Length: 212
Image (cartoon, rainbow, N blue to C red; front, side, top):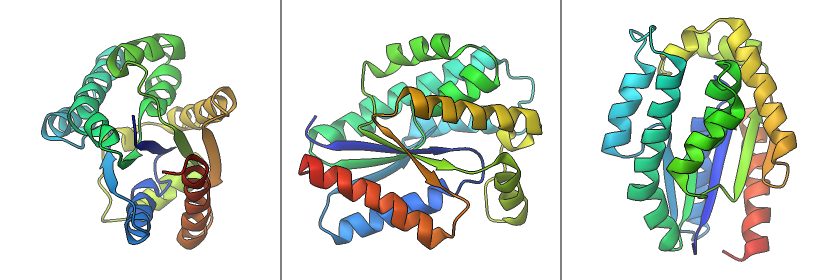
């Protein structure tokens, strides 16, 4: 791949989506060819799967069903959008990727991280991110932000109890230790400007190092 694959992760209310768009705009102003996308979603088929996964009415969805749907969405998104962009030498900025499945389904749902990792390795064929920014925020603060934001999409995961979100938080810290070579932790409780500056510093350091 000639391009660079950068993902942003974090619990609910971490501010990923807003800051990802800002970073994309700044990189374009610097002359980089950038694709900003999200998971689940990013292309028509994956967006349809997203609607099924996150529909608040689907409270009976089994954990394994959820994990498989995420993997299916991820596969289609990769082959249709991410991989072609990387082959064309573009920078792909993606809101969530495999780490979300490991944290939410593997750990918080209790399915086992290794089982979920195996499912996703089949789906992605080693197409791992080059750099991952983990927006670190406590579940209490993240859910408080969501409650105050009338513009934010309210989905099925927002309806989970605090214990679920605490397990997601724990899982991300485990992943940061396990994949320390690519995951960088950012304090997402800071102001939007501060988080953006910190995230952009990590991105530019990586891009300058790789000379993208």
